Image (cartoon, rainbow, N blue to C red; front, side, top):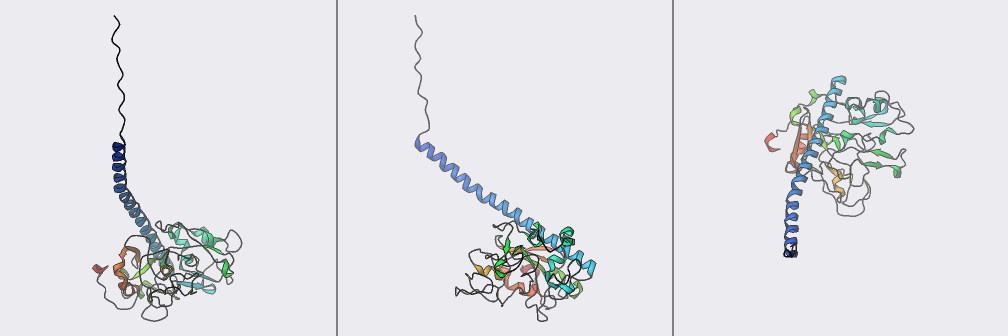
Length: 305
């Protein structure tokens, strides 16, 4: 007698509705996970950015120990230390503190002929939250040679008006000593986040157009309109607010090139004169001018920022 034939049962697959439910659950899980991943990534970027500022602040304090003053915002050739001779032109404070940023080789390298040193990207001058990455500025349309210069995301604080007492900041056209900061180094800004402009035509680290000479309440705007094609040029577009204080950075709004700010959420990091680094929210915008002066005599409650 032959054994009974076993009829195979058809395998049951997913129905269309079940598949759609699974896809919907996966989509919900991803939508919940992505903000958390982005938040962790932004937190790491903000910490790296603050560490960059901390290293710059330490470099400036070491420079102060060596020269008994901070470097000037900009130094003309006769005032610059070797290896910059009379033919070099102008450099800013970043160039002068290169040896204290572990960039001695770059500082001592010749500045004529390729490879041009001002094209060198310095990692601690780049904020990791800048979606553009390291920015290279092209000055060739101004007839400068070389036309390409690496940018900085951090600038020195020059007060409210760098040409008028008592509104000067820690970076001016003369060296400032820490003992000159009668407002207190722990309550006076030294460095702040100020990424390269959306037009990528200012804030190179060498100093051609980065003197920090516009202060934190600038009325002489680099970018007069929201759509200006180049700094100090107006195209008749919507005017930028003046004075320029402290606001979020927006690559679609050229007014961002006028003020301190960042690509971080809610504010930007600043280094104070004592070397501490703090994250200030944009609600502290109107307090920045008070924190920017070295001898203004303003009383600012630290809890307000």
